Length: 607
Image (cartoon, rainbow, N blue to C red; front, side):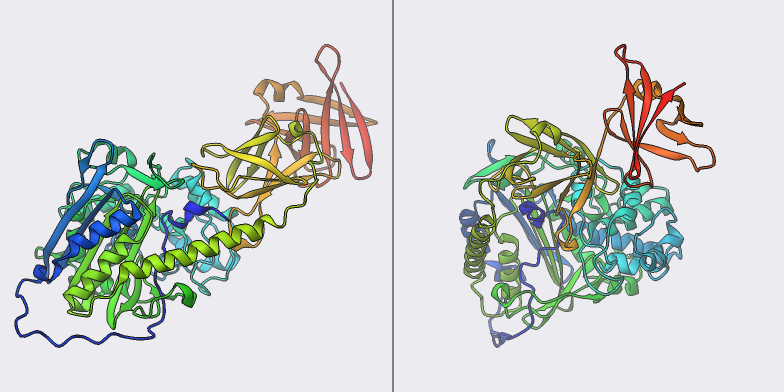
């Protein structure tokens, strides 16, 4: 799907994962090296200021730990541009997908207690989960889910567009198509991690949030961290969210992601996250108390699923081949073991990086998902603390950014060339308007706006749809405030000539469109009005209503469910091409039912 902002939505953004082609040599140790590691970080403030100015990032916070101590913690810029409120080490930011490592850590704790298993099928622990691939359904394990090898692609719009509950999201997984076989490929999937957090919450009885709060936040003294937009807004020291819109930094609303929480809803500060960094660099204990076994802590940092190397055009030779652990990416930096994860959601981008063998780590939080400040600062810190030559990371990322921008502009030009001029829709615009549903993705509502449309997927803010060619409509490429910019929607008609479905490539990895089928919204009174007996020759058909569902019974046949199509026309579930239309007389009373079937049209009078 050509959805620009989803690049950063709780995403694993591979900013620089490449094979280790070359490795810089270490400088000989200086005889008069400073004894305080923090002395090596002189000049970091200037680099941060330069990068913030170039990428127009309002606020940045950074913390560095070394040998079990916080050696650097600082805030730069503003958490609120308009009010000029400064960022401090206690300012709360959304950390996005870094949350995943918290979910895997709590699972490791429960594993130590014998309550869950890494290699037991998830369905044996969570019976309500079902997957469309029968083999994955029976064999997928927490190890598969945590390391993103379930076979499912992202399907992010399912949760991003909706207010579905966590339980509802788990239930909808059964309707999502996989693109790979179980354990065959790495495919990042937020729903899989959410499912693991949902399972943890059911096992502890505390919910996922309560489990993380009692088992991680409380022992590590991360008492300012929280899990929800509502709690972020209530805090006294929180960063506002900003994005780059049409060459300007714009304030954007927080996006509520409570339901997908275990995959990315934590809000934290660099002071709190420095505690988490030190714990991850340790042996599973904190202040003398064991929280998780050292074996499980190391298992989370171990490679589980191999990741494909990115194109050479966007790679850096100082980074090694990549693999994914349990909520962590495993690679190397200039020959040193590197474990990291980044994360982002509307208005925020964060990075957490560890060099476990060197007992050091960095966390960088920002309130603008633009540019590569976290990566530039992180790599610069590592170069300094490892006494390596300082590499020009700022210039490197700027150069790569320019190349990517050039490629994007070329892609837009190529895309616009396939438009067929002089075409028009096959139906009057009013015929396309209505509600369409998909059992996995939910509801898509199309409303007419003059000579164009407005579409709304679940609870997303409506976005414009303009005619592209034939029965295809497109969200303008420059549409603001929507992740659907540039997306195309194609309407399809039934054999009877009615607009029946609308489809769009909402999950590009599928290679096929997600299809939404038109539904008619009828009141209980409308449904009740068609209940009764209908005489078709010598046969009597009976229409009943129960739990808001109409059913048709015919002698000697199974009972059929009637699915609202439009007005008082219903499709017969399970019988393609069969439909029933109820007719009214001049007084508005239902007098007959017309059966449209492949073998003819038959009218049944109401008794």
